[in-house]
Image 1 (cartoon, one colour):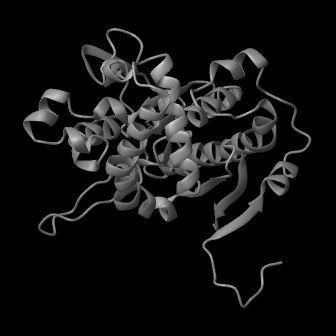
Image 2: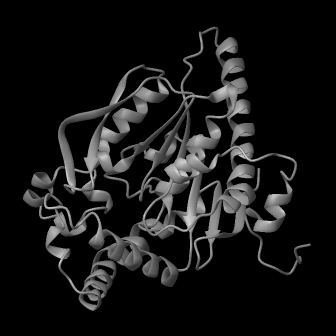
Amino acid sequence: MTSTKQRASPYRHFSAGEWSALNADLPTMLTTEEFEHTTSLGEETTLREVERVYLPLARFLHLHIVAARELNGRIAAFLDRPGTGAPFILGLGGSVAAGKSRTARILQTLLSRYPDHSRVDLVTTDGFLYPNATLKARGLMHRKGFPESYDRHGLLEFLTAIKAGRGEVTAPVYSHLAYDIEPGRHITVDLPDVLILEGLNVLQTGKLDSGEPQLYVSDFFDFSIYLDADTEFIKRWYIDRFLALRDRVFAQPNSYFHHYAGLRREAAIQTADDLWTRINLKNLHENILPTRQRARLILRKGSDHAVTEILVRNP
């Protein structure tokens, strides 16, 4: 029981154990093969973690998806207009190295198991980064991942088309190997039941320009999740991931970061620490962390990437 003397919170807090107990009778919906497919470098999520945290979360989101669909149908009937069948859009934000990619893939797999919404697409905002040539021309290469490095207009147009119920909406593709947008490549989103949009700054609002009304990415979300952890944990995860990339992805001759492949361990750690401090930590403090309280649900992680607490915004 929360003490009345404690500061009021817009969230209800659940420990991982309390959260798991909410869906104790639901069997595992993720096979070992599917679980392995969600694996990302530097992330230690276990199948047990999926059962305890992400399975109940998928059920919780399922309730929201079904309710939103029913509400949209009722509103369409009231307005005497056919429903658009627009996807339920789930926004997923958080720091670099917090585990967004794997969380998004786990939720995509789990949500697609429900017959009511079996078509679940995943899009990352990386595809809406400006090409490197544009970033260099604008002097923004050192601020890649900051809000100004994204084609915000293009992303808003994409989401507007999705919410308008248009089919075959395209999004650019980003290559982490080339560290750039892939020219001529795109993915097509064709009226899925659910669209997961994952990215660093998806919950950001920014500043108003000249008092003119503005749309923000989060205006299109039906639900939003923020992955949270102590900064010291995220820094360690970032460095661990950098070391793993050095041994694997960076070792490929066509990798943008191939020059890091030959670094000895200590030099690699120093390099990762410098990149974290100069770029990612700054972005986290200035742009990402301030948006945490805008999320409908916060997943709080411990040092081993395991979720220790779930915060659900009060209705």
